[in-house]
Image (cartoon, rainbow, N blue to C red):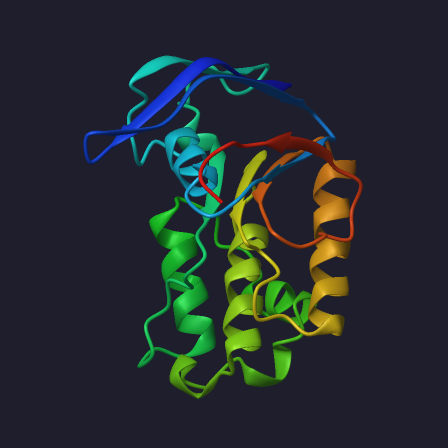
Length: 200
């Protein structure tokens, strides 16, 4: 499996964010997208996820499910955690599993993996920032998709949370997955680097 972009350009609000961008990541590889604020790191992830349309160029996933689009085979984890505060931890994860079309998987197992097994019935409003991030990471586990698009995935995580993230990410890569992560910080995994330009 290989995800590639060729001569990709992005325009937002009438401003060219980047143009002529080439990149690729094969199965088992992680690509760290780095660069200053405003250089287009998040925009690139949103293009791959199908949340924005490229102004030019192509994005192709070779070797994936031919019946599904690239966005349907990707998880997008934004820098904000998409949680409903009034719902419990389990209800939030169950919502995302159903919304993303996943099988009735073992929610408890996914929550235990990210260290939230003790909080399964707790309202999400009671979670710390790091715990909310862990719950978002559980969304990557409850529905299997080969491409992970991660925007500052370790933000708000303490050292233990960062190690947990690195572990589940290494497992995903070992299973033939692809990771593209916009980040300002080391991810704790082996990565190739895609450097974006822009205004510092």
